[in-house]
Image (tube, rainbow, N blue to C red; front, side, top):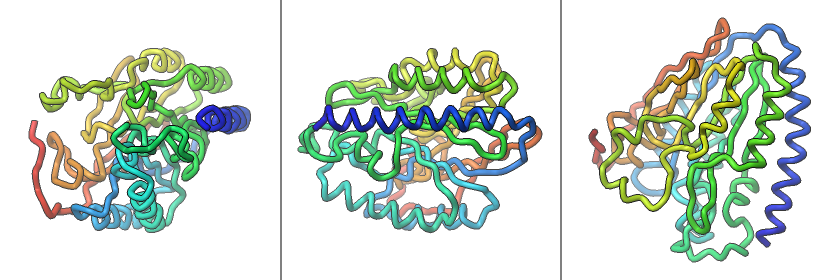
Length: 310
């Protein structure tokens, strides 16, 4: 079953490479971009408890009332599919899919680690079970990495979740790196590009994360081979890299490229702010060849407040 699922995934992604290349070529042919806004929100971590549904609905209603052209969900739609069985995972996913209708805008999806079904052994899920791992996301939303264009800007959506047995780390696999090289080979140096990822390529979170995280058995804070991806940005017009996962709002600039982490819709998993970042999302504006972001909160008060301090 695993081999079959992976073969199907390869077919999906292979077809997408061809389609994505053609779209990238048409994007490259557009010499002028049109100004627009979109929303990048991440880590909704929806669940039945702790007011999460109310919080997501409040957030989505605010986004729906905005003038954004579309929404990108940066991953971790549910909390959690990795450690639970089928019934719990499906119940959370149903909550998310129902809630997404409130956005009333086109939505693009990024794979998050919590969107991978049954990955941890404590879930009791066998890897042969239908929907195991990333297949759960693919069945709900489509390919785990892909490209799309909007008003002259090329968007590259990454799959930053690498599996290590029944665990995970931040990693961009070889197949995906080959696809990225193909995308950048087609784009001209002046074509505007925005990269979207769940686990950050670059983050300062390791400098101030909670001390007890140092004992983590996996490398989850950043993409471990992010340097390989960053090298592809050289001599290209990467307007910015939008990132989720860390639940903090921060910007780190490297070699002229800004790596912007969005914070989480869920804050500290629906218990308040996390390391100074409250519940929120990014409103993104692309105008005059520049990407700018504004962090927006939406007025959620958690029923059980426990802010995680610096």
